[in-house]
Length: 489
Image 1 (cartoon, rainbow, N blue to C red):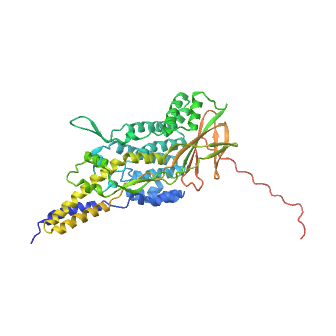
Image 2: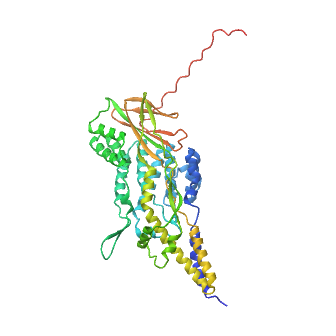
Image 3: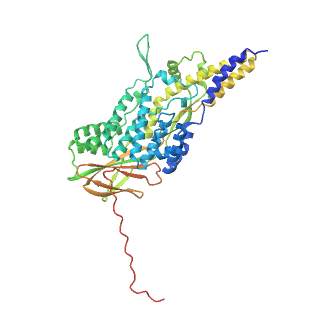
């Protein structure tokens, strides 16, 4: 006898299979091998691991990725999560001193991610959440969107600085765009009142963009504009002596020694924040937000909110980081922190967590609905089996969920800086731990030194801009004294 439940059950099985098929290894596990190598300061292995991920994501042979530095014409930047891996590749290329490739990679990622971030709205935010948040296009955390042009500014300064000013201005413009975004705002059709929750209103502005804009205005001999940028940086960064010094020299309250130039040292220490998977209860506030994005009336909201859901959690590896001590002609200079990346990442994730939980509630509601339908289909012939089927489907589809832990893992933990007014000529900076920088200083001009230091237990990589590089002569070997006569034994 033909079972009338089979066609309906078969259709539901397709949905269930699709939900389960969407589950895969968590993003943090995918990038684990790269992160281990990067954390150990092993650039060669780290880059090989990221080349493998780019090749796997784009379908391009790994050797092609390696030889082209990730820039071969067959590599589609917006293919899957390729642009996330390209960010890691760009950091590797910068550390290797390949500034051209780093700039091209960062620009490609910036263009894709800016476009995807601009398309974000409430409807889009709740779309495609049938499996878990990893099924949604990666758009980057908001702080990452700001640090792409930040890294572009630094690497372009090392490469000659032709576009550095434009990149520095872009940091500030993007920051204002993000903070002014109305994502989460909902206008009630009847009352016209604004409801919802706008997480970006809670963001603190970061001062790194304004500081770099000041540095570039200073190099362009525009002290008034430089002072204004530095004042913004001072306000947003919480105050730093290096910024006060910059303001003083650009307002005329202090003067650099006659015939000197400026050496800007940027220190990028430690491993930046990494997203790992944790769990959280669905709050009442998140459930209220979920009602904005989808109708949960068909599902028991109590059931939806009972089980904890997987969520991203900021993990900070390097928090207590010492400054960089720079010895210049016997005088010591100390870098100061102008951006703590861990702190910004945590604050922004906290602000966005209600919406992350709201999306999880909608996803759980959808899965509960599918489970109920599957149980009802089977239950038409066997009530007990139907109830068991509903439970099994719900458990299976929710147990395979992963939190969205995709993030740019090779960012530094902090951005620190100091400035040295040096006489014209060739100098050697002692940066400690056996690190030195040969710098050629020109009167009235700026030189740039960037120290990348992900593995704090090892020496970092010292980079000097192409116009200021100076290779000090190797010391002559000490003469060997030979005795005039060899005494008899």
